[in-house]
Each structure stands twice: as C-alpha cells, then as structure tokens.
Length: 491
Image (cartoon, rainbow, N blue to C red):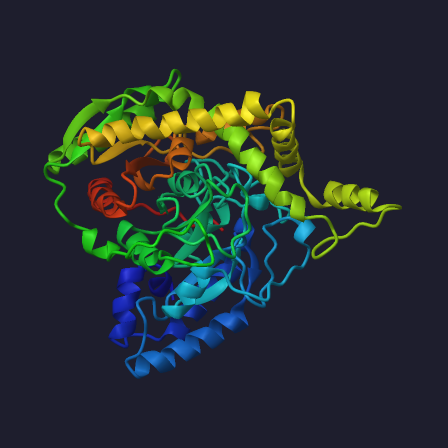
C-alpha cells in the first residue's frame, strides 16, 4: 500500500496503463492514508464512496482503452472550489453546509480527464491567511517537524490543506488558489511544487471569490512534472469567466527536461531584504549556481517598486474582498442569524459567520473604498500596481526569460507563533510572492533545500505572461539539483 501512495502522478499513470494496479486499488490506498493522518487536519470532508465510484468507472474506461490524461489519479480539492452535490464552505461558518448544484470549471476539467476526488481540503477562511490557522475547521498541521522537536508547524496558507495532503502522501496532487502567494508559500513550507499560473490561464468560475483581479487557480504536486501534468488539465479558456484568456493550452509536460542553455535569469536586487536569514540567502545563491551550471545566464535586475507591493496588495485585496463578501447576508444561502430588522439580521449573521481575519479585511476594504478615502488609498494602490507591472515588463523587454527569488522569508513556523498581537507580522510572509499577483504573472515554487533545523525551503521562479513552460523547464533543473525530500512519518 505504501508503494502505491509514494508514487508520482507520472509513475502512477504508467502503472495504470500497464495494468500493474487499478484505480480502485490506488484510491483505496489513499483513503487508508487519509484515515491514518487525521491528526494533520488536511481534509475537511472525505468522500470515500464518491472516490470509489469514480475509480470503478475509470477502471472500466481504462479497460476499454478510453482513459483520459489523468485517468484514475486520486486528487484532493481545496474547499474553495464548488463541487456539485458535495459540501463547499470556503472553510467559513457563514457558508454553513452549502452544497453547490454546479461544478467549478477547473474541477469539471479534472473529472473530464479521468481524475478521482478523494475529498475537500482545508484552507484559510475565504483564502485569507498565510498559515491555514483561520479556517473554521481549525488549523492544518504541517507533516514536517523541526529536528528533535514535536512542535506543530503550520503548512502555510491559504492552501495549507492542499500542501500538507500532498506532502504527507494523502493525495497525488491537489487543486489550490493563489491570491498573494497562497500556492507558492505553502508549497515552499512543505517541500512540494506549487504553480501560480498567469492571470486568466485557469478559469475562476465556480471558485469562491476573494479578490477577483488577483485570484488564480493552480496545482500543488510532488514534482515539477506532476504539476505540469495537472496544469494541462486545469488550464483553458472558459466563456463563463470574463477574465479567462482564449489561448491554446500547450503540453506543459513537454517542457520538462528541455535545455535552459542561453536563457537569461534575472536576480532582483530589491529582494535582498534586511534581516533575511543567511540560509535563505545561501539557498538563493545555490539555486542561481545550479541554473548557471545548466547553461543559463545570470543578470542582476532592478524591480524598484517592489517595496510598495505589500502595502498596495493589502489595499487592493481587502477592497475586492469587501465587495465580493457583501453577498453573504444570510438571505439566500448559508448561515442565517435572526434579528429584529433586516439590518440587524445582516449584522448578526456576519458577526457570527465571519472569523476575525475575514472581518478585519472586510473592514479595511470597506474603509479604503469609502467616499473620502477611495482616491487616497484604492486609486493610488492601483497606480502602484501599474508601476510594479511595468518593472517586470521592462526586465522582460531586455531579454530576461525568468526571475529567480526566494519563495518565503523563512521556513515553516509554529502553530500560534505569528500574527497574534500584530497581524502585519503574518502579512510579511507574502513579501516575495505578492508582486507576481499584482502583475498577473506566472510563478512556480520548487523545493530547493533545508534549513539548519531540517525544514524545507523553496525557491521561486517568475515568468513572462503565459510562459509557464519556461518555468517548468527551469523548475526541473532546480528539482534535479536539489533532489526530492519527504517528511519523516510521525502521525
């Protein structure tokens, strides 16, 4: 059974094609692993009956030679994706036991290609958080631990359940979403590979909205190749999403192993922060050396508006969140707490339904959009966003193919360690990732090493718009040089 869950998607795909095992056997092995790992709190809803029914149907198709590109592969789905007839809550009390009568575009494409759903994965409430501690189902625990310590660590957020489940071998891959780093940061904290595609590459239809101009779906997987396989199924034009881009989806897997000789890799000087741990700095230098050894050329670049990215992000994202979350009023679906008037009912419902972090961001967003402050905050933040985008465009215009940066300012920290008294302390976790969302660019986080306490650290590669293939080629170079590492089992 252990052998079945420790394979990559690419290996399992070959095994299924060669009839070495069935999708049902593969699914049962993962369901058993999920049951044994409830201490991680990665899944908020297990769907064993649905998983087995899907696996049996796929086995019948494989027998006829009709399986799709993901035929029989068991996946976990972040609880932000609407799944038809399966509870979807965004890990918020306000959605209660909401069961959507429709399927998100991204998940429908995964089922179209033959994937199997194991269940719904934990995330920060409405994807607002960098540690997966704001979920109404409680925090997710990282399967990694510091050497010689039993302290529970966070897996990063908001896609903490996705990253934890993939790292702990509970599913072969997972869907995730990234608004300011919510795929790449948890991937770095758990030694998994996370891809934030170009804005518009994957449909947002059927995904619970946080900040509509920043949100983007993407995969978390065990290897660069697996991420490429998943991404091909997740991407594509969707007329139901007005921000979806009508471009052909390339064969991302074909980019794995392609030569990176002659590629120009930008190293941004603004990402060298005061007080950055020496281990992160060392890893960054090492990663650059690996790419150079593979034939890439390193060039120092400047992204001068980087320092404004985090404050601008924490104006734009809450503003859009306050607008998106206005629909949760207790009238049409989800939680309803009665009041003497409709206004009081709204207040009571939202006070009980939203957690502290969501309330904080909605209030910030409502403030920056209000009549007296719109120009001073929101409009100015949008202008800064344009400048951040231009910084990247200028670098790409000079022939830079991709940009190498650290993925996070540190390794995973303990549950309850950060953000209690000062929420900004938590927000600083997104310092290397938010620029990518502000500029709508693709980014990938690849495991690249460990810190002194044996915890994984990741590197981030940022690409040109719709050039995810280059990121997969470069990510593979880093992965091959760093090797793969998995957590020691304690759960």
